[in-house]
Image (cartoon, rainbow, N blue to C red; front, side):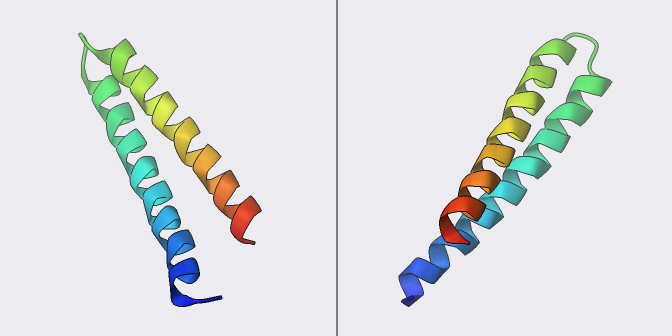
Length: 63
């Protein structure tokens, strides 16, 4: 594999971790907020599902 092909999975794994951290942050906001709890809960769930889906694709395609 050349350098460019080896760099893409690393970038995608970093993106997975960014999505997980963002989902934890959105979950924390949803637990602390009385007005926007449902909206941030939905955002946290969608970020978590996106992170899991991206992680699945990275493992399936690059391993």
